[in-house]
Length: 338
Ligand code: CP
Image 1 (tube, helix red, strand yellow):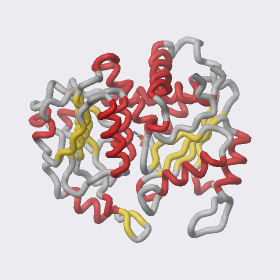
Image 2 (cartoon, rainbow, N blue to C red):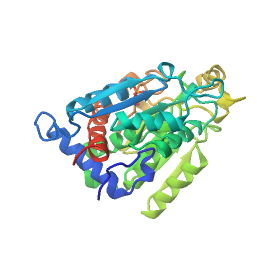
Image 3 (cartoon, rainbow, N blue to C red):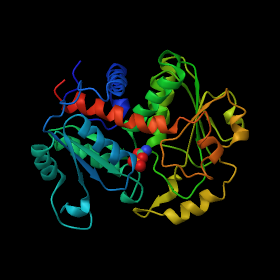
């Protein structure tokens, strides 16, 4: 099975065998990190990282990943290019993608939150780049999905629950209040990939904070295919009952986008009133001694208490580290000579 040249916009687009191949390689790359085994996989190759929004983990881990594979990662921002937009004349995606393909072995793209005017515009932009690019397009988080994060989450659960033990374990994905008004990408990716790998999925959030119905439907189908449970809850406390992994995260209300733009202040006012929605020590007592995870950056004191985020069941830093390993595996398999 070759993954050479394949785009990665969402893990749901890849087969379970392909995702497993990435994860198995990521585990080996972690074990072999300081040997020469993978040190020349991207020899003299350049990966472009095209960021509309800021990042800590994604930029740094992709840059480190390219270095560790013997290549180089180059940072790009739209303000340093002359791209055509709704408001200004400039270069088309077709031309930009075709030219970038002549320089780079792959192109990562991030577009989230206030850089889109309606949910789905980020997905449409990545699809447009994928249509014209001759090298793999990899989502580095866009408004709809965050595949690298989803793979790192599963690698973290393999580490802590055991690779063979995910089936039938309850993953609680619970909304957290806060002032960040985040895109739906990380939580939607986690729903999809966790259900592919056999977990029961409960998504808990306040009334009105519904996610993309197509993603919910796809997650239900993933669960049904393996006889797993899928549940939506609006209870900020009882939803914790029996959980083996708790994943808390803020996400914005669908009404945050209107009139062609994101209205962050309105959403922050709405979300900050919902103070019951925080993952804390009392709620974690209702679980099966669950691990705590979060894609980061964490809004401590809102999405989760310090005690849980820094507690002995927290796996946040392992998952953040896994971003490096899964991205090395993705780059090696889709862009490298393996
Ligand atoms: N989880 C994640 O993508 O982090 P950054 O936004 O810091 O890249």
